[in-house]
Length: 227
Image (cartoon, rainbow, N blue to C red):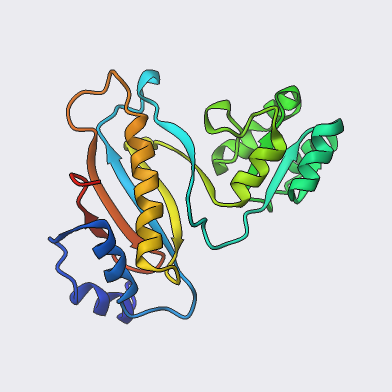
């Protein structure tokens, strides 16, 4: 059952209104707040068929203002690459022993980055990492020889995404404590990047619907004709 705060926020909104991005962010910031700094998320419904391999939209994009939270990155690497990843700030770096730790049930991290040579280890972790959306992939930039650079980028606010079975892509774009302008710039950066990933086989409208919301708040429709 929805909370009184949620119901009040919903009742004070015109749910049929379509907002410009910055206006939507200002509206979210003006709602009755919770006791914690909520995450703001954007969701875009795309005109693709995720069941077709040539219409899988997936990638990673660096948000100019970050996410407003610490991103816990672990790295599969050895030798100099492992040393560089540690220096870049990875919370844990390893190879077989790190894989065994994850197989044993440890998943207290947000992002996994792997050197290509380490896929012999990481490939065995698909049933653990896959359902959590943490499996490294070359397309998302999480399988790379330059693990140190990738670590720095993801810790600074680079976000990974992939279209789900319903054709949606969604990412966090910051915290409610951000300014509306910071949230807008992060959101536009994400949407611009998604536009560049349009599959050539996708027909009709690509960006079908866009919505923004905070963790405990109602969703607001966003105009995408002027993105």
